[in-house]
Image (cartoon, rainbow, N blue to C red; front, side, top):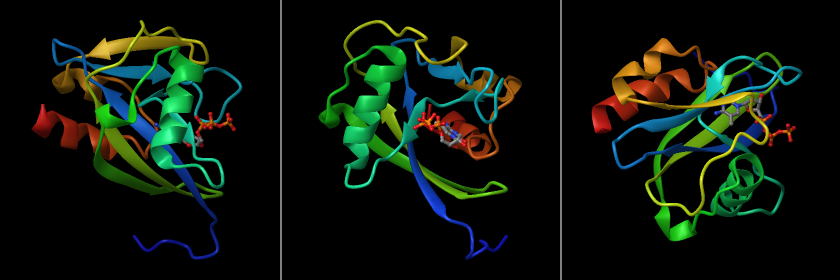
Length: 138
Ligand code: 523
């Protein structure tokens, strides 16, 4: 598929938090937001002038109430998807260490899921291809 050059690009950062049992955290997008009801890798938009890792640390604090340090974030793969009105570019980071316990502050639900079970959860199209990459890695 060729990208439509007239679409603006939105940079979003996301993370696969991986617990000691190798399960991955996914979060359900709440009613009223775009793509409501789908399960995503948590994250959000990078603000102008913001470093991607700083954006992810901020989003994880706001959305899940956890503290992550930049040294614990390893870049893994890029997702790229043309939604109807913008093109999403989204690096996925891996993270195995954080402080605090995850709480759904902005999502309607959270789930810790074994990599081979991730495909059972409907996800935004940008996140879908990441599942196979994670399954191969974990
Ligand atoms: N996605 C997406 N997958 C994914 C995320 C975190 C986001 O496809 N794992 C899409 C969903 C939205 C756009 O990226 O169309 C922005 O994500 P959003 O709304 O979670 O970013 P926020 O929270 O920074 O945006 P505001 O609600 O506008 O503050």
